Image (cartoon, rainbow, N blue to C red; front, side, top):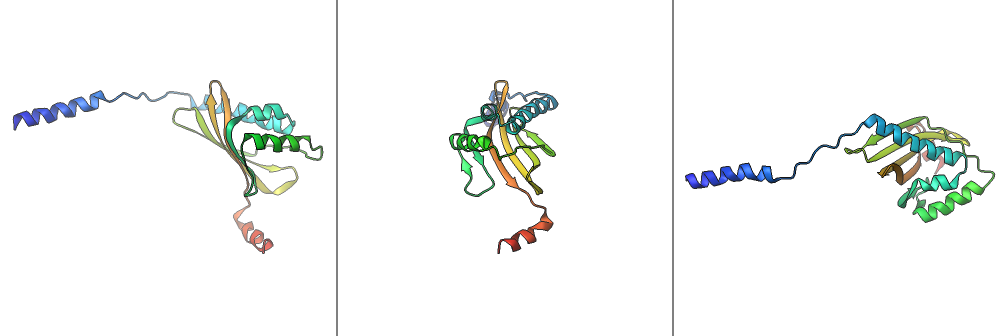
Length: 165
């Protein structure tokens, strides 16, 4: 009985001590959010100024980009084509000013989910919400997912459903 007890005791002591020690990653969430906010501001400034090069430089090559229509699902190549056409249209008047932002960092501070809410210049009735995922590669934040949706107030949903009949 004693040999079994000592074997089990030895296993209980050795198994946890053989596990790799994972140190919690230490980062300053305020500084990381400030850094990401600079990238987000750069993205919207590029959008508002029709600066296609800067705007697309912040998008991942393997990203997924979704628009407001159920059929609007693009890879970077198709999204680049769409944005190039949109930015070259002189009747298009970009003027995004974010009114609400939430940034949720992952546990190591190298990726984040961002929710930005705003109104398009031509529509002040239904807010637009961007849900984006950013990853930090080196010292740069890159968007690898962006979804644009309209978010009507709950009390307006009945009117919208009736209008679609």
